[in-house]
Image (cartoon, rainbow, N blue to C red; front, side, top):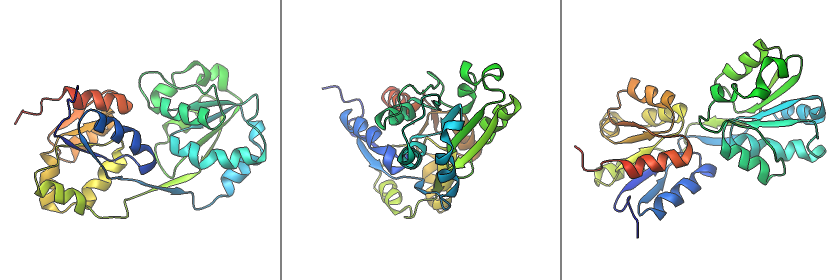
Length: 259
């Protein structure tokens, strides 16, 4: 049996709702996956903006979902009033969000095929000025985050409403499970898919645990996260391809015997 991760303990730090698929694939490759979410996902504090969007959804030309969490926390409200409007194009930052939309009855979403970020989404023909100027766009997202997507679409002439439908919080639990793995010599790698989550991790750790983190291979699927990790003093940062597939390829190709 092909088990390139045999004997390796890999920490999966995606939000709990998105962690299971990557954890299962690590296990299928012989590794032990430890799920330790670095972001807790909860509904938005104020439900009024999402409810208001549901009431006028048919007025929009484009609805952008920034993550599967945005789908999970917005579509039940949006579809409770009426079916998805026939003239409303759904868009997503990544293919996992496209799949989440299709599973919940919104097929045909557009998304980048290679890089999964706002920059790549903004390169799609449907988001260019000649297609979007003068039209209404809703961006379904969490609290805070980058403004690049909204600012660029406004610069292209769109009328953009950013609608928070969930919020990201630091983990409720402490770092004891990770500290115990390091103490036992059993934490071989971490996967991190969010710069915000990475900062949460560093904030959880005491100086001794941060020393362990700096020496542990950290697999990240985006250059922006790699840059944040390097700025935080982490020394073994491995930039992989995008999404779960890229992380898995990176884990399988890594030379675990290197010092």
